Length: 195
Image (cartoon, rainbow, N blue to C red):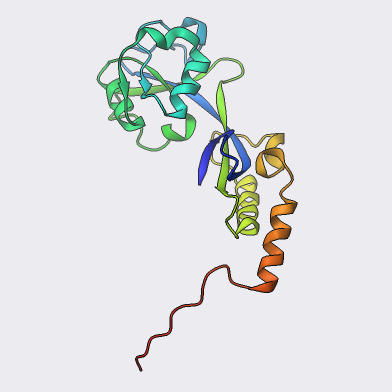
């Protein structure tokens, strides 16, 4: 599973993958970043659209925009609904870069602008249960993703280590010990009584 880091649950192991910048999602006919470069200080107090309480992207947008979002009363349950609200001219929001790829302009009604200077964003990582016996496979997947990061993201120094910067060796050793005793982490298939 991919999550925005950090994850506070001690039962979840994490491995940082890449930094994903935020972009400004705005109505195409009323761009806030007319020159193509958004600036947090120039965003209007009114009009910031947020996801509902409980979404990490809501908290991240408020961290970036400060109290800008406190004046707004409009919120959404999903990124797609938020995108449609922006297309209808209801306001603007911050979107993760990967959510803007493909057919994300709603027929040309939404435009996206990067931020001037160092962009705000989030660290995205791979996450799994600490008790999952496939730690070695998750590490292999992490290495592939580090070698081939998604477009518009960048691998950071933190991503060079697994489990949120902690050493993954203990989890891998535990996995190897368990697989030596029982090579399959899954029970054998049930044998039927048929022919």
